[in-house]
Image (cartoon, rainbow, N blue to C red; front, side):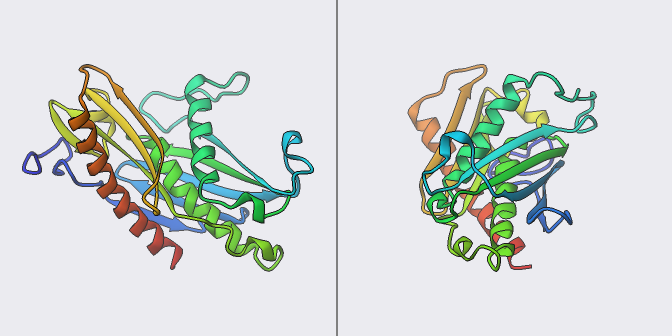
Length: 240
């Protein structure tokens, strides 16, 4: 399997080049630019001194996320979602929020909201998984930078979180699919995992052919290896 070259010259179990630039923006408490192959996403985290109505008077905080693809992020212009948000956008926003809430001890930050924003500059497959991976870095930076103002933020991170795609292309299991592979994949899966070896979400879909338990286990093993590499990239960015 590993001897088969792919459309971009990688072997099946290789992650695209990963680069995370911390503090990419000036105004947010935490931000980064994450680049995975041709996909580039700006992630930011800001803290608001309130919580949604359903969280009031519970003594704990909340984390929510917004996601968007900028008009020039793909070959064909992406319309801004000014009036009505598309189902795909809603799904991805909820996925990012769920993933990051698993990383943060919301009971320790008081009645405050961490607002995550993920804006796709260039989309070449794996935008949602890149957004999750980058949003973790932005969130850690935000909590660190606000520790002097909010001492409870120290130690609020429970675990690392990262995500990656995996799939089957022409019968071959492949890690971290670019768009050219994603659009023709027989199976497409997104895996979100913590550094405590716990899964947050597994989104697996048979696009062209059903798959069995053995193939699923192989895809999860492949995703685990890729996510481990992303943890290393996050750690490197947070040490800068």
